[in-house]
Image (cartoon, helix red, strand yellow):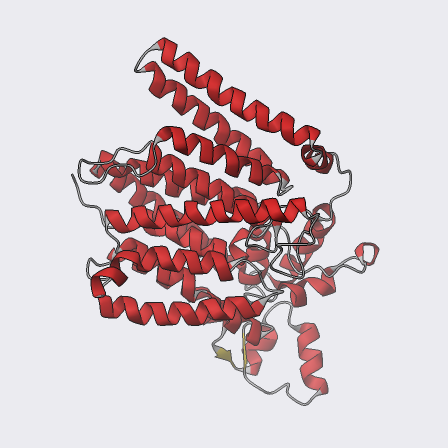
Amino acid sequence: MKTTIAEWALAGLLVLALLFGGGGSPSPAPELVLQIACAIFGVAALWAGCFANGAGRTAWWLAVIVLALPAIQLIPLPPSVWNALPGRDLVAISLENVGASGDWRPLSIAPHKTMASLLALGPPLLVLLLTASSSDSQLRKALGAIIVMALAATILGAVQVASAGQVGHLYEATHRGWVTGFFANRNAAADLFLIAVLALLALAYGQPDTKSPARVPPGAAGVIAVLMGAACIMTGSRVGVVLLAVLAMVWLASVAIRAISVSRKTAGTAAAGAATVVMGLLLAGWYAGGLRQVAARFGATRDMRAEIWPDTVHAIERFWPVGSGLGTFQEAYAPSQRLETLGPAIINRAHNDFLELALEGGLLALILLCAIAALLLRSALLQWRASPLIRSRLLFAGATLAVLAAHSLVDYPLRTMALAVLGAFAAGIVAKLVRPS
């Protein structure tokens, strides 16, 4: 029993995260289910000895750094200190009106939301530490779980598109008529398909040792990757389509390079076959009307992001350098929103997670982000030099984090719990203890 739990705990957590963590803040109930399940999983993992190998100092430092920001923002401050903080003037007036101006207050302007953000870190951090403690076989099962869930999302997405958005969507507030899979947001769905393609490449083209052969044959990986690529396109996510094109070029290049090592004839056949399959899918999608809809999104002349970003910068200036508190974007953004940008839509995100982090976390958040990047880079370099056998997994992890970082420039992938868990999984791979081969 303990052996089974230890072997499948990480894969099981990823499956649960992808099933229940895709709704975002408008759908908190499934995320609460995930948080409770992760608490149970954490206890079971301790009982089964899943952390016996030890996560290592890098993983623990990452966990401490991530928890530090919301924890600091929830420490009560005396009125004299709190009132001196930038951006608190409107809140101070409200407190004075209700006779609470003399109360001790935490740095966050909405402490309940910052506490919710702190609790939401539980599943990602559990996955981070569990990944950093996992064996090679456990990591391969976890990669396989991501691929299986992405394939299931592809099938569900086909139902969603075929029914014109009437069947298959799991959330009320969602992008109907597009592939969203297990997510409410099509951009998040696109990220899952991209990460699953990277997992395929890691399992199919990695450098396994004799005891752990690759589980996905390269040919099968190519077919599955094309299917998930088509699903990624049908999400309608513009950044997702651009990133998919980059991955497709890398995949075709890797196929050609490997084939060249065998023979030039094989290289030409492989490249031509892959190109034929991709072009066939693109033409079929175009004539079916789906790709025309996607192409039309690239021709859109108006994007709310261009109107949100300047107001977010103004809000950052109001609260700099201490920030407003994690999870408080709406409260911090509203006073800075220009009248000409007001409309029926509620602006709940900055659609640039780096700007949103600067607003909510201030200078400390940016310093901690740089510390996380430095720790991951150092660990990645040490592992790369230590063992060629794990380089495929490091490439998967690095590319996954790069996909999430690139999409964070125009969206908020890590604010979705499922993608935060996948990001933590990638970070855990990078943060594993270095064991020279």
